[in-house]
Image (tube, rainbow, N blue to C red; front, side, top):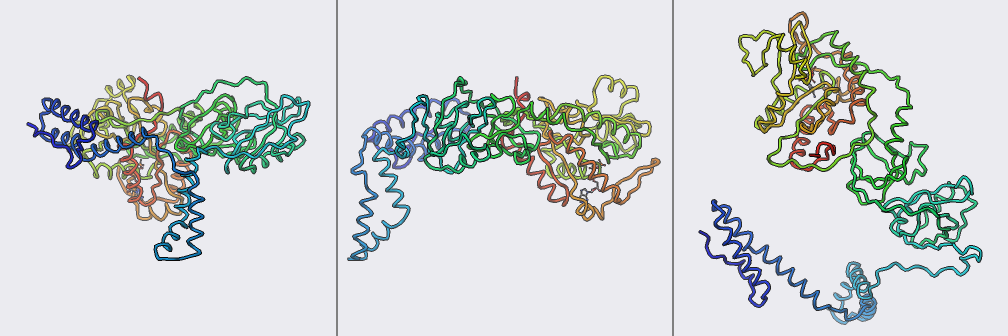
Length: 573
Ligand SMILES: Nc1ncnc2c1ncn2[C@@H]1O[C@H](COP(=O)(O)OP(=O)(O)OP(=O)(O)O)[C@@H](O)[C@H]1O
């Protein structure tokens, strides 16, 4: 049973009838909800929330604001800054008392001066920037369709690109950047012919000479333009977000219409696409900024560029072991070579449309897919994660067709199946990955991943990079981590005491890593990153093991707590 509500000590003021009514409403709400609560903890929480000081103070503040709004207060005078200045002058001349000296000191403070200046602007309702008077000679008689545009820009680009019309030779506005000064003014349009900037004629100038004039003009800038005839396209304020799947720097792009208008980005950055009217140059900005849009190559342009580049580069130094069996096999190596090369000719990574996603408490965890060159430390990091939180992390149990050994239990080390069953399962596409070693099959089934997810755990799986594409599904929503070796000097240093298992002729031995292993690892990482880097959300360099582990753990903690950008296709029902 709830005790009769007592509203926040001393907060309830019976003079304010509206506050009193709100309190009564909250009290009756509290009583009404009582029958639905079994737990005294819940009812205490509700009582504290609805009857506590915080909510009631907020209601009081809100009411005060409403009252002031209704009173329509008027400023007593609108030149407080000037008055304070005059007073300060008088005080400076006669320091009559310590109080006068203190007042002088207060009035001289820049914060107070700025406050009074803002007060005066509000009092005078003087919000618009002041434009200088129009120059008298600005309109020639024959140019009756001339448009004089004056806008104020503050240390920012104009937000428009220009080009020379190939037929008339005129300088015309090629595009207006979304959110820029020109766009916000609404006065400069695509197709307008530019005649003068701040009284400087531009018709006979080269484009390269006009661009700095536009960039440097600051404050109130006057443009003389002949309005274009192009129809104004309907403004389509897009809210499309994409993840960039390649690096771009306008400084290195000789084809961009204006380097200053370009937007640099790195693979993995999330961009908001602001305009796709131009088939070649889109407008976009980084999703977490409010800046004006910049030019980026359209999907089509980037695809065209990449497909024109020679595709003669070859991969080298592919991993030596199959993850499950950690065995050396020359034929495995050869077939992986072929697979890698086949996969190179897939789709060209450009932009991936993404949406924000926050896992609900009842949803399965995103699976964590890791890849990297053989020997880089995937098993080690997986082992550390499992040890750090066995309640949260888990791994799959692989299948094998080999004989069960005495100490092994079905479903613990492996699922033991006959060779015939394994082959049937291969035909039924049961395996995410499988391989053969010493006459036995080893494989990871999709079902084993689903089992881990159904237990409410994060499934950790390290795979061949080409398998990532197969698992890039709405159901699994993989978070892809690429584990990378450090530069070769650090690799030599950090792995000088490392021993790896090497199994030849069915004998398990340990060996130290050789110079060839290091070179292999680095070359392989390079090839993997250039081909599969676009699928990766987190790159971790495994130099110091403890640091790499902390980095990985923090990244995984973040995906549990913070919203993530996931492909739009994963979010659709
Ligand atoms: N940062 C590191 N510094 C030193 N040794 C490391 C580091 N990371 C991993 N190792 C060691 O390197 C060896 C290989 O690591 P691990 O077995 O985890 O590689 P892997 O990526 O799983 O390779 P494979 O797929 O070939 O088994 C292990 O002995 C491991 O302890």
